[in-house]
Amino acid sequence: MGNLNTVMTKTTQISLNIQAWHKILIVGGGQIAMAKYMFFKDYSQNITIVAKDVIHEFKEVIARENVKYIQDDYNNLFSDKTKLLEWFIVVVACNNDQLNKHIHQQVYGTNILLNIVDNSSLSTFHLPAVVKRNDLQVSISTNGKSPAFARWLKAKLESILNFSHDNLLDFMGNKRDLVKSKLKDSQARRLFWYDFLELTASKKSQSLQSLLDECLQGYMNNQHAQAKLYLIGVGSGDPENITLKAIHAIAKADVILYDRLIPKDILNFYARSEALKIYVGKKRGDKLMQQENINDLIRKHVANNKIVARVKGGDTAVFSRVGDEINIAKETNTAYELIPGISAMSGCTAQAKFPLTLKGVSSSIKVMTIYKDDINDNKKWQYLDPNETIVFYMSIRYLHNIGQKLQEQNFAPTTPIAIIENGTTSEHREYYSTLENIHKDYANHEFKNPSLILVGRVINILSSNHGI
Image 1 (cartoon, rainbow, N blue to C red):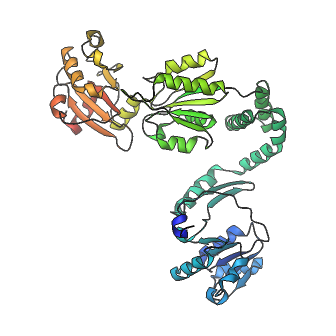
Image 2 (image 1 turned 60 degrees about the vertical axis):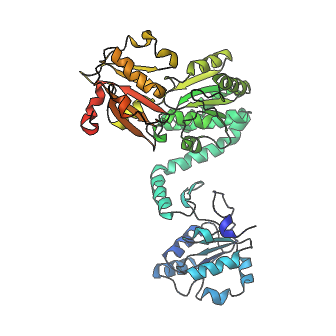
Image 3 (image 1 turned 45 degrees about the horizontal axis):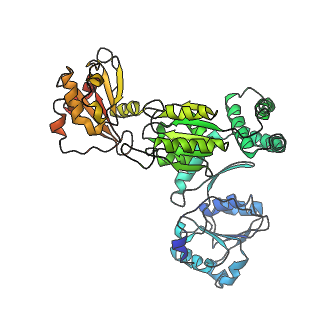
């Protein structure tokens, strides 16, 4: 084992079983030391305070609650570190770096749990901010980085979690054995409780018992685990663009097949830790993951009665091969659901602050993608109208061809064109020009994927800012 400072770089939340007889030592007599005592007093009846002096409020608490208080210097009492071994937890809440390091050295190598306030590198555990409603407890930790942030978030959660949630928790605890006796399959029970909780949120006027009966009856008619395929659009780029419906579906999934452009935060925040997450990202010219491979993965997992979430960027209805995956669901007789997302064109133009349609300027939108064979196919171009907004997906390599072909179709050379790169992400970039100038304006620029191309007079709304 290396030095403790280098080992304890990350923390995780673990519930600790503190018995009433466990000995807890709090070093310090100020406001923070008093707060630590108030935290631990609900768990242990064997707490000792060590400080040369304590603030007036803490003195009152010590006297009122008959807390053991030793008015002395820590070094006088624990010059021999073996005297510390009887303690289960030691909390140091005094602004003394030298003493903090000394106690850390004494505790190192023992089984004592050590918390040194505002010093995560010397601590072996952190005290989270806790929202507590009897048996319902939500712990918030920032890995020691910012207790102030944890307290701020706690205050937010305090306003959300009222005591009705404690009643709900009691009800669920009392009905747990009943549900287990009715639903033998563990996956069915997990989904039952998830759906039951959703019902309690949407049907607040009904009693908990009637909601449980309603939900349970539906599941009892389907005792075995049932496969399902969710085809989910999670929006464009920004993880905050995801919908609540998409969040709920991802939370239910046993298997998640996700694309290249899915923000990591979406899976980290919403997917179950035990869910199998499989990267199936592909891009034009990429032979590593073909649609046939994805189809085979869906077949495999629904055959094992798994809930599969096929997670895509943007919207499921726009250039997402969703039709292939619907066919797999039908072929395997699997229930499926399409969950729409904010499309790339909606997300990108919203962030760029111009609309896709505008009265008197553009009354329609045409969405398309260009492949090499389309460049000289007049049928692809002849029905495009200068009075509509045209959106090109996955076509950035043919940007200059697009400018030329549109001018051949009687689009004015001054027609505005916008390229939005990595739309709605932290690397969102916008580039503006006209059909006649796009070639020379960006002749030496290499656009990154994904890039969306938009053509139309609606872009003129930004002309004063971008010189179009």
